[in-house]
Length: 435
Image (spheres, rainbow, N blue to C red):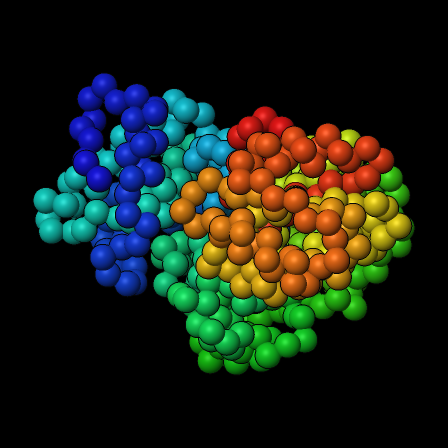
């Protein structure tokens, strides 16, 4: 990584620089980052923050909550990861991705702060820390009303855990990033719980497993008031061609006739978690007006590559671990059970892809098309193909080139439905191809 000067930088040069920054900091923890933020005047303290962690559902929950706040008239900054096609996607205000010009300005201003502190012996931030600093600074300049910061893969040691939120939200705990977060659900749950702060309300979706007890125990230990949302609190009333209609008893309000776009069943859980978070922020207007805002906020939410229909009968979903694949399969079984289906699949080699493929193989796909996304993390197609042949009775077709594989699958869909799943990198590559 060669450090760039501030003069005559182009947008592309600054993106190349940011992407060249090492993924991990030299030292664990947030001490280095805190020193940089202090030099910057603590931009992360310039607005109320909602902090969101979890294995799956983080991005969707962030977007549902942002949509609810926007309907209420607030200007909302959102910081999420990873990006699918362009790095700008990580930083947005009211659904608008940061422009190239603003991204370049945020980079140059942040780079100046980093250059200053390096002279005092403070290390250059990691990739994720640097983009977080850019976002925090940009949101301060833009004078937003709220900011929703999504963690990276963890919680306790995550760069975003320097914030002092008004609300902490944990969406789910599943077996992912085990090489960093621990190899048991309890260990991973403790890492996610680490975003809770003393005296700050926290919210968690209770899936009736050991993670819930970890959350409750940690909240009690540090003195964080914890609320849980459970599956029994919502009921899916109807599924139409365009919407999923449901009701939700939050424990304080009873909502009926709520709707989200017909994407995936798991989005209902993300929606009600965001709605409960919106309640806990205690910014509701009168009940009649607020109900209309709630309905509009939930229904208007969009989030790319979460059971997104990119063309008639062609869907992309970013499910990339066991928990997410299970939710994806349940959606297929419920919403597409009687449809003829084709699967396009690519996966990262550091995932438990055997378990993912075993679960997918319980779905009656007429054909499975195995491809490889770009990048070193992608699993070899031969290994993935062997796994499908072990578990699945479907016809298996393999393409090393992702575009060739997609075009083959798309051209053979006909009246069938094509589902592209296995990795967010797969989803990003497909979008970048303009499919």
